[in-house]
Image 1: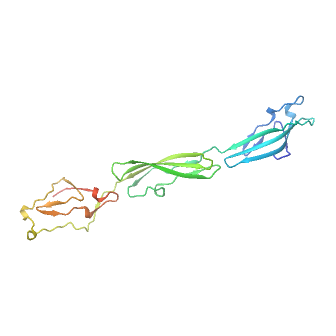
Image 2 (image 1 turned 90 degrees about the vertical axis):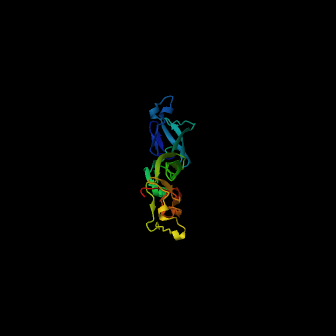
Image 3 (image 1 turned 60 degrees about the vertical axis):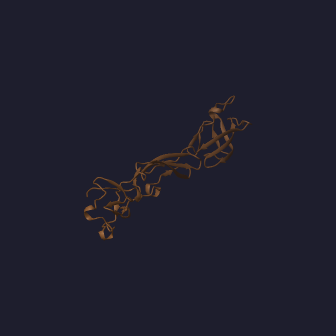
Amino acid sequence: ISLVEGQIIGANDIYFVGNNIVPALGACLSDNCAPVSSLTARVESIDLTGNSCVRTYVVTFTIIDPCGNEDPDPFMCTINVYDDVAPELTCPVDVAIECDESTLPSNTGTATATDDCQDVGISYTDAVEPGECPQEMLITRTWVATDSCGNNSSCVQMINVEDTTPPSFDPDCQMLFNYYTSEDSSCPLASGISLVEGQIIGANDIYFVGNNIVPALGACLSDNCAPVSSLTARVESI
């Protein structure tokens, strides 16, 4: 406050609390003879209470006319200053990530916030919408910035978790199988294959050549996100 105890101000003088202009007292004063503009006010006391969220000044004045007559009743003025402005919150940009990447803010970005008066805490919550594939999803991440007075602001970041990486196979994995009639294999001319071009089989599906069981492909397959058991194989040519 721009006043001190014992200070005398005019009836039309403003004063300040922080950067706030406190109106002059004159609109509330009167005198039986003297014009209001000639009256003065002496600051008797300034009482301060509150905290960083609201601060209250109670200023007690004695009103004096030009002849030195003083109003015996104290004139009290109460000024409250509130912090009611929410923090300014900036969301990280929307992102698309692969399904094997972390969805944590350390990978997808973290919101930042500033406040004119208080310290700020930042938190987030996620709402997850499943995608077309089990390992895909759309995350709606809501960021909230809250200052120590309870003022808060929010923003939304969209995180699209995609699976755009095709499965792969181990080139060193054994895919050559030999079967012999001496070991009860069907004869070569009688050993037809149980697959046809365009057929789709599961990674854990076996197939036959004659009476011989060909092991499933799964042991040689991998994917960055999906379990091997969910992979399929399409027969391109035989």
